[in-house]
Amino acid sequence: MDIEEKIQLIEEGTLEIIDREELKKVLEKDEPIAYTGYEPSGKIHLGHAVTVQKLKTLQKLGFKIKILLADYHAFLNGKGSVEEIAETADYNKKCFQALGLDETTEYIYGSSFQLESDYADKVYQLATLTTLKRARRSMDQVSRADDNPKVASVIYPIMQTVDMAALDVDIALGGMEQRKIQMLARENLEKIGENVPVCIHTPLLHGLDGDAKMSSSKGNYIAVDDSVEVISKKINKSYCPQGEIEGNPMIEIAETFVYPNQDTLLIKRPEKFGGDIELTKEELLKEFGEGNLHPMDLKNGIKDFLIEFFAPVRKYMEEN
Ligand SMILES: N[C@@H](Cc1ccc(O)cc1)C(=O)O
Image (tube, rainbow, N blue to C red; front, side):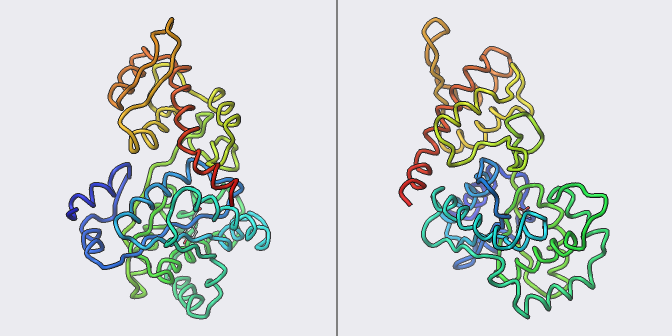
């Protein structure tokens, strides 16, 4: 595969790559490193699966993958004690493995290197170079709104920046909510003479309730290890207005998980409602957008897809 083809694969389903020219150089390296950090979270859900899917693509292209289980970051963000968070991190690691990242994937706990003197030295350097305003602003979509923010909230983005140097990454991948932190990191790493990674951002999924963001704290997600019954129940209840494409979580799931993995979506219907149909992405968008496909039918197709798509995850979680 030539470099242009690789870039196209990486670009598919992303919102932005900063920047494309730098990515070309990274792709010429022998074993480039890509990373994503995750605050340990009660459940690993479809939102997380968006970046994991992209990491799998990068892995197939020869990247070394590092997954940061960002325990100290979760602690700084008020998610519990470091010990509690470490336990959640172990469970998350198993979920990532179940999602099909191979054995070469490295899982790294933040706390395993974030106390080292070299690390601390870089944090202090960046603390002198970063304005409070910019650090705070970078956290807008990562921490909950707070009228009286803690110092922790400005240490957080600085540490995320130093992670990139400490883990020696060529690509920093994250959802669009990470954008302000990642852009700050690019500027700051350059200032302290560190390698500046290419930043790649993937779209955020709407919650099943139609909320702007799928998130663990809102409970509006499908977890990758949800049972068949739970998937069915959640999909049946989810927001899916007839004829509406924008902000429709069922359409988003089709675009993000169905079509990158298969050409058509099978929708089973009783004969009296027209019988089974198989739709390409273009057909689905047209039929649903024009109001010709009933939300219940779309939901059934998505439900059947997700049940099958995550069957290997449920199996892995049971066996391990
Ligand atoms: N900020 C990320 C977590 C993260 C932490 C440290 C990093 O180096 C990278 C990512 C989140 O919101 O979940």
